[in-house]
Length: 355
Image 1 (cartoon, rainbow, N blue to C red):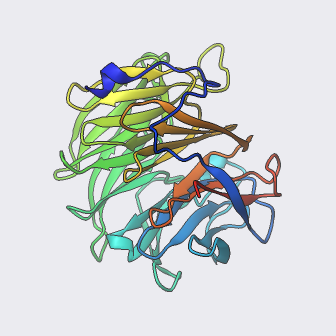
Image 2: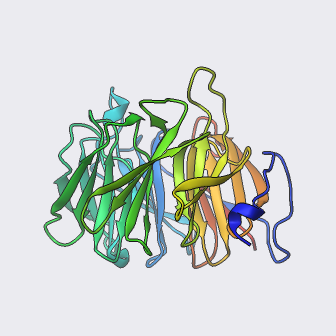
Image 3: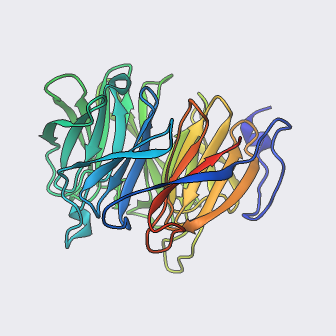
């Protein structure tokens, strides 16, 4: 039965059971982060090849490196802009694992990308994206060795396609004048060779969000999909046919915390269903082997959702501002970065496991 037919609209606090073999996540530890307590952070990503995790740490002008095999802090890579008077020019911001784990690319507040060697954890290259202020979210296409980068706060904001081959040639620049607020996360859909990027607000109709579809092979904007009842901040491709969007309601005349999950059908180019209360401003990741989608929000929720049925498996309470997360596919642990101001441990990474 198609996902659109089986999705049940769920209240945020509902505790519906997932599949019979589902195991619930439990907090099993924390990874302390030394230095200035971390309040402003960007994306968290795990290099599945090395087991190392990376967190963009603006307070300390660096990238935190931690080991998912031992759940310990490893080092901090310096040399980033840090927090500036203009938050739109702060960094680091986005993190993406590139070239089979050999490199980790990190976007900075000065519109540059810094390339980190996956073994030495040293910055080996820095190059400009051509913007004036911060570069933000990224995604990698391993088939064509292309990275998509969002320059969220230039006018107009734009997407760049950049080769991950030596020289890092900019292959395309795609302005998105239709964006009313920011360019957020991107993901690569291998069956179609397309990148998808979520954009919270459509300039012409601020009640809607949009999602850009870009062909990774030629750098062309294929379509801007209007997203009804949703201001999308994150996305995860959960199957060849389906994208889960994390929607926020913190926009418009009467903003409020939280939001919904939108189930986007790739073939039709439309939202097929919504999971009421299962979204919010934050980020998401997916473990396709377990069939689990994880969405962490700024208003202290960590949703665990079954990718096959669209049903809520678990709703964990975290802490305010805990919006960046990653998953280790080797041990199935989930890592959530917390805010030093409102978090449980003065700014640390909380570790969850089903064991």
